[in-house]
Length: 93
Image 1 (cartoon, rainbow, N blue to C red):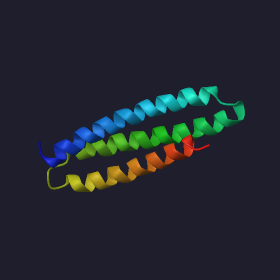
Image 2: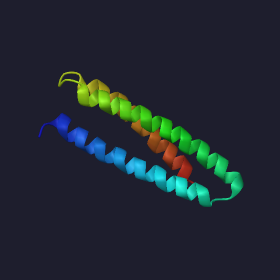
Image 3: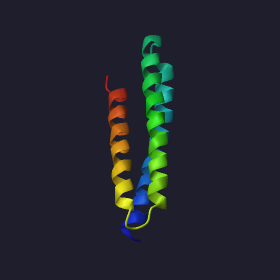
């Protein structure tokens, strides 16, 4: 398996894990105090928008040729890092 295919497999797995994390965050938000719920749901909405962007970037990456995929990889990783930081902010007390 070459590098691009291995990377695509890794990203598919990461995106699935992120979707599961978002579901867990929704459950957590439903159980917190009312005044925190709005903050949680706002951050979760932002995270879902970023997830849609990441899905689009990933789709472009999978469609890119061997010569172009590194550019899409970089764009995807920027979005991915932004999502991970947002999740950290949601999970921090």
